[in-house]
Amino acid sequence: MFEEASEVFDNMFKSSFPLTFIVFIPAVLILVSPLPAEAAHEFTVYRMQQYDLQGQPYGTRNAILNTEARTVEAEVLSRRCVIMRLADFSYEEYQKALRQSAGAVVIILPKNMSAVPQDIVQQFMELEPEMLATETIVPVYFAMEDDELLSIYTQTLTSSSSQGSLSAAEVLLHTATANGFQMVTSGAQSKAISDWAITSLEGRLAGVGGEDLPTIVVVAHYDSFGVAPWLSYGADSNGSGVSMLLELARLFSKLYTYKRTHAAYNLLFFVSGGGKFNYQGTKRWLEDNLDHTDSSLLQDNVAFVLCLDTLGNGDSMHLHVSKPPKEGTPQYSLLKELEMVVSSQYPEVKFSMVHKKINLADDMLAWEHERFGIRRLPAFTLSHLPSHRLAQRSSIMDVRSVSPSSRHGAGEPPAGPHVDVKKLSRNTKLVAEALARVIYNLTEKGAPGDLKIFTEQMVQEEQLSAVVDWLTAQPRAAQLVDKDSSVVSTLEYHLGHYLKDVKRHYVKADKRDPEFVFYDQLKQTMNAYRVKPAIFDLLLAVCIAAYLGMMYLAIQNFGILYSVVRRITQPKTKTH
Image (cartoon, rainbow, N blue to C red; front, top):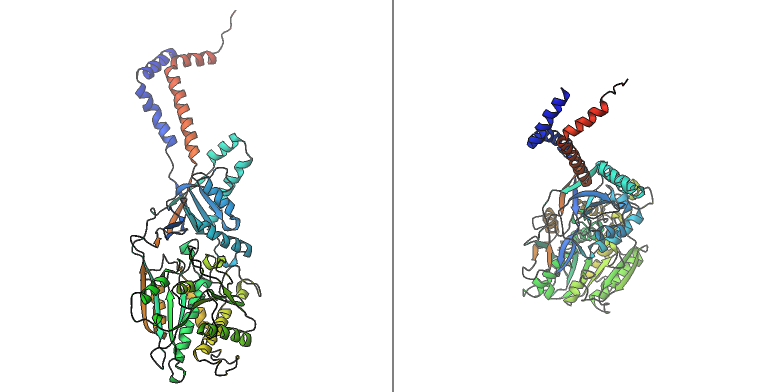
């Protein structure tokens, strides 16, 4: 009977090969049907800067990401999404990922940036310009740390680092059986933004006593800059400068309200946009006032231009000049009044003048006053920083922090750039006193150096703090602040509250030869899907192919196989 059954099966399979697939393929399909990918985590990522300036591209040129996660400990990073933590970040590892043509780089930042150790903050601030110095085709993203993202990083780190000490076979088995994460962004490829307008604002306080009055111009740029636009809050650079400008406008508007204190100086206040992109707003404002109109305060008697930049911290103050002021000029008077106010009222402040000539060969101007110096207007920048090259002027680490006593312990300052409202208030009083002494010519009138024009109550520390808090509540990168932004409208409201003739100025890039080009897709949603690695599919396919091959051979030779099995399993008969 068994012999007959074997012949029936043998003939059936040999004569009807499609029947073989009917019997076996459904089972195979059930085994290999892929399980749906599990979304382990969804989080927001912020892309590195992408812009063109004077025809030179900067930052990352790609925005699409759909690749498997690895850490820098892995041997092979090609076409992988390399995840790094800020605490372990180094420029060498970042360059390693770029050299190996990584699919993307994701840098995880801590939630509380102001609590990061000082050495890590300083190291990263110094690396930000290096990361932006040249363009890269690798998408670079930043993400804020949370529990789920930290768990993904930990699992990926364990998977990446354990392969270094294993044999080739063990690595292959580990890779095939381990769970991985597929990192996928939801956005499209980045493209240039057309007709983007950078907005600047001006307002004035008219002097009294004649038509050809000297004009003092007070300037501060409001935009921020860092390696990622959506993480650029610019607390000290230049939220502090804008806060001081608004407070100076408030103080002198009060003085100009009364006939007795209405001075014979025009005061022109200018809040510029595009400051971090070679002061594009200031450049266009100067062109509009000097080249395209016949009536402008900038064409008449400009005493000097005072630019305010990074004044929210430190016990030093530096007057940066392109040309040392000559004795007898209004610029020299301001220099001497600043020295007198510092020595008489604020001896804890170290004041100095820093001379640096304008280098037109550089791609970027050092300070905003150089824009005015190019147009032969006497100007200088006031800052607590001794050099324009210091990294905190253009860093995502420049964030607003609370008082040292409430977070870091008494006497221990927060790490990185920040704004100390008490020092910002002191610096505001110092500048206001010096300007008032110039405007009212107090030194020549014999007023002592310790004479205070503004009382402690007149300079409102709470107002300064509120403005800094508001400015640092949202990123102010030039690519994010359009003409309808709340930043522009709120600044316009405050200026209109204190000044007259407040108006906007716009600058758009030339379509034929643009000086600057911005790109979109700077903020996206990223999904981390829990998946098996690609090699798992390969090994599974090999196993399935081997299985099908063995089954096919067994079916084609069913009679022979059956005979062999029967001989092996048939009980032996005793012979007499």
